[in-house]
Amino acid sequence: MSLKPTKIAVLVSGGGTNLQALIDAERRGELGNGKITLVIASKPDVYALERAANAGIEGRVLARTEYDSIASYSRALADEMLAAEIDLVVLAGFLTIIDEQVYEAFPNRILNVHPALIPSFCGKGFYGLHVHEAALEKGVKISGATVHIVTPECDAGPIVLQKAVEVKQDDTPETLQKRIMEQAEWKILPEAVRLFCDGRITVENNKVYIN
Image (cartoon, rainbow, N blue to C red; front, side):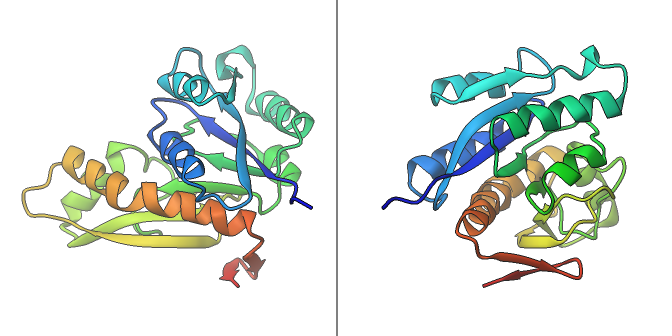
């Protein structure tokens, strides 16, 4: 008897490079029991939707601009994913604020990848190139990426996986961003998804235990 697949929704707002890493991992059989069944974009015409279409995955647009509040948008998003019987939600460059309605609908079932070693360079305002600008300004010798479970407090949820990446003296925010994506984000995000889908993640006292 085959196991029922773990249905994954990936939420995107842009180009979808992390989505592509997940699609490629699934093709290689590296998501365990996981299957990406839905991609939701917070705005129309983003390239991530094209990536989904090319992979034969259903893509939907739930445009933030069409909702008058974070609350109404969050409710619609939660309802959409509940209706699709989603088991795991992955934020992959999803730059839209959502509220507790989504977290309550999917407790400990939302993963995010952040391009730094949390608790460094995280929280409000730390996204995209801002993260790497701050790391270079501080002169850190290593940075990296973190996959964590999403909670209402920004970037403060239980940490699932981290991977360090060397910072080079001649780095720009763009070169550091690229290296962290290639060497860390695209590796640990699929791995964290696989661990979840294989039932190996337990959360206790705001900490993740991998069994």
